[in-house]
Image (cartoon, rainbow, N blue to C red):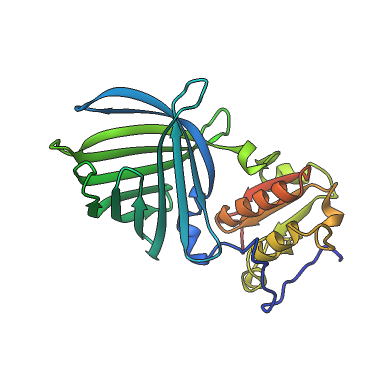
Length: 287
């Protein structure tokens, strides 16, 4: 069938659309742009509120880049704070992060990840500051991913606790951010069961976005193989024999956990707007 696409091992993705490094799988749920509101408080300052954009991205290597910016919820969107960080994953359940901000404080963290609960936590091992920066002794950060039952919206909640300017460690910031579909140009990406997808008609195509070796070891009946790396590469091309014939066809993407399928859906909806894309969480369904 012309739907079957196998990518050779020698085929490398383009520099502009590399597949995520396999080591990032436990924290792939962080990827994307998140927007929302938060509040801050501390014994030495007055309480405040803010709006925020938080971005986690990758370039194909085994780390995430994080950029954060907040602004006042007023008409002029007055800038408030910015941070930049890099997150490494030396083991499946361990993280490391370096972070800097314009207040003159740099932080080195050790962290842990619970991929099943989609929770990440960090605590500083080292804090350094410029001569004029405020005294910060310790920082802890916790992130929790979730999905709202009624709306299906994906969210990221976080807290930041600090020990600074003579105060004991205590919560300083709390925020709830939502996946920003406008920023990521994602539309019409939904999850569904295999039965629900089959009810959409006989023309639907099931795509296994795992690697060829995983596909050959066992796959869903009727599925074709188009690995995440190959899909992301072809999604950015003006024309592609792999994807052009799927423009009007419902497409169901799956992998083992759903993380690679979600990344593939992002690529399709960003570069191929209007495609009818669904995601199947296929854990437990593979042979």
